[in-house]
Image (cartoon, rainbow, N blue to C red; front, side):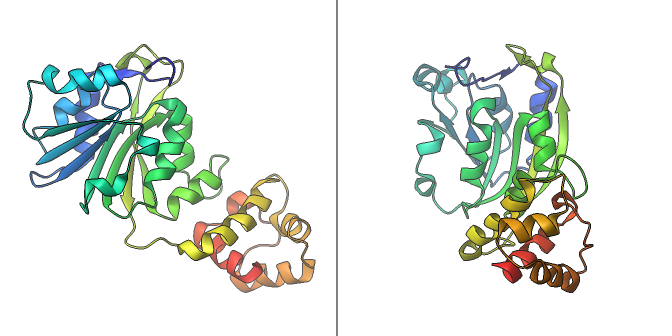
Length: 257
């Protein structure tokens, strides 16, 4: 199962402890772990938290996990595909989340978590290049639609980097953990998100070109209208998609939708 999902198990206790510490767990906290595997990270979460719920896809690993860790009273193991798991069954929380995510499904898992209202902090492991895209700032090549989709719901910071030696089997790429802190309310309301991404996807689809012209053509709008929106928001006419902040994308989408 691990190989199929590109799962690389933590074997580095220092890495494990760093992830658990980054999650800012207090003794009264409830913690959700996604993909506990053989329980390396779980081992560090249990002494810190009131409750740990570990959702594991692999039936054999799920069946063995509690016994392997000594049957702790504050651990509940759920054998389920997280992408189909009923998050509402966990209760209101707020939940803190820690996970060494399988690379093959890391982004879908992230997108499923983001709109869920019952979490506060998450520390998630990704391929380093994905982590850099999540935590990117405007102006760089890593900044894009993934950055925006995360930024709507949470602030993101790349907090830990790990070598291939921290995992077995060793991955072909470096890994990094991102600290996500959930916003009280999304920066773009749910009812506006379809229009927001319709506008942003047009511009990022041709990110090497100036966004003004790309938007005018892609949205079938007069260049004057788009130029007026840019001027009103203080966006340079020569700006490319990656140079426009999330807040400005939100305002731009409202003006052009």
